[in-house]
Amino acid sequence: MLVIFGANGRMGRALVSEALRQNWPVRAVVRDDRDGRGLDQLIDVSQISYADADHEEAVSAVLYGATHVISAINARAAGHGSPRYANEAGANIVRAATAAGIENIVHFSVVGSFRWSPNPLNRRSFRLDR
Figure 1 (tube, rainbow, N blue to C red):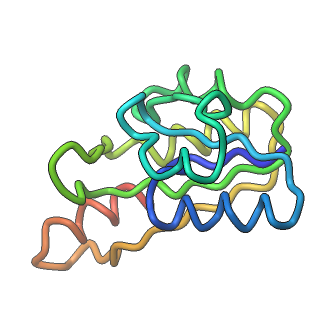
Figure 2 (spheres, helix red, strand yellow):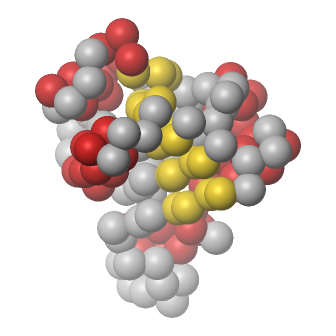
């Protein structure tokens, strides 16, 4: 079972699509019920799981049966209504997956992660990626 956090984003949808193409069982995870738009074109809405990566206990709840985890959450808000994660969100996913015995964890980010960058989005991504 492949669990994909941030499954509603551009990268997340591409990952879900490719995993399904390769016949992986997928659990697509989004932050809340507003985040399923676009993803519902790939999978039935009843197959979408909800967990806020800002809270480790919420992440743990969607990891049952998982063998692999991909985090495609982003450190920035792409626009009005897009999720913005706390600095600990990425670490929460890794901690919860590790506690669940999952050894195959990948984190993707589309934002440059340079702590020295003058751009606040890059600095925020650095903290999330860390």
